[in-house]
Image 1 (cartoon, rainbow, N blue to C red):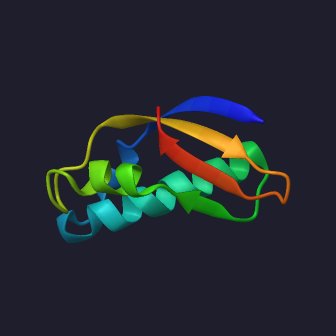
Image 2: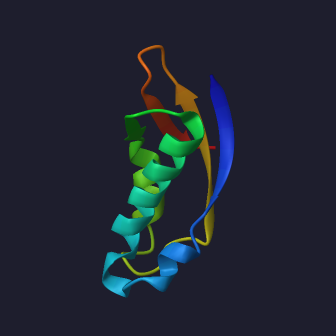
Length: 80
């Protein structure tokens, strides 16, 4: 199963500036676990680099993610 989501990251920006990128990755992971009903989510390297592109403090407002659910139940998240 394959889906494309636009994940809003505005609420992550309300937290401390020094932890925004880590919180954004955790938010993406929890969003995909909830919407794809999966226990394990694997974040692609390019998606991770896109989150850290402008540093720890300046994350994007939203991000488009392509999520693919494999047969064993894991979800692989890549940039759309």
